[in-house]
Length: 267
Image 1 (cartoon, rainbow, N blue to C red):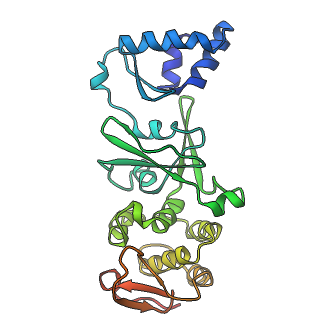
Image 2: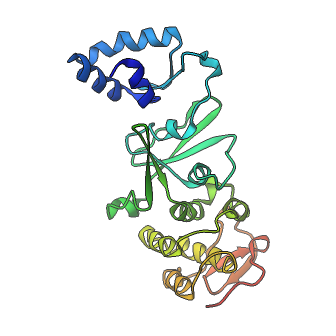
Image 3: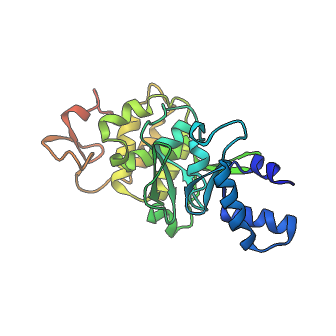
């Protein structure tokens, strides 16, 4: 494999990737990478995303004209990065691309990385998943010419979005963001909610699904399973909007007037 072949298989690569390539080809140690990377950056073939992470610029382009695959960049920011939350829905074409940010999850995410006008925002894997070794529960792996990208399934993304309303602008944004989700495995939604082991999140997921029974294959058993996990005392649906609201007793949620379903469903 020559260097151009490496670039084809690794359009976004780390120091470790290039070290492994050089050792396999020449048997040289990592020191040979330093002058090579410097020369390629000077010539415009590479653009640095952050220290130790680079994007390849095709020969026919100038660096400033480079159009970057946001998901490949986010998926290589850390060795365990998972495209998650809203960005996972964007990956599947189920939500419009954000003009501001890309979200990924990791065990130790970086601070916000700005590249080509986008903020790459890392979110820690929930502690409950780490505790039971399920960080990759509901994660799909996509291999494009040897570059593997990890992406949350739509089912996991739905629960993660509802769990972290602050990442999408609050409950008022949830319905429009999730409106394209019409083909979900609700068993997987419930199972992932169980893994999170968060009573408030389970109640919020149940409340959302209860309003989607005409669109999604939701059974009474799904809502019942989520209701068994709901909090014992009323919790706010959206903690950023702790104003006067209505108690939805089925889920023990305090819901702001504008967040109420037309007819909260019993089961």
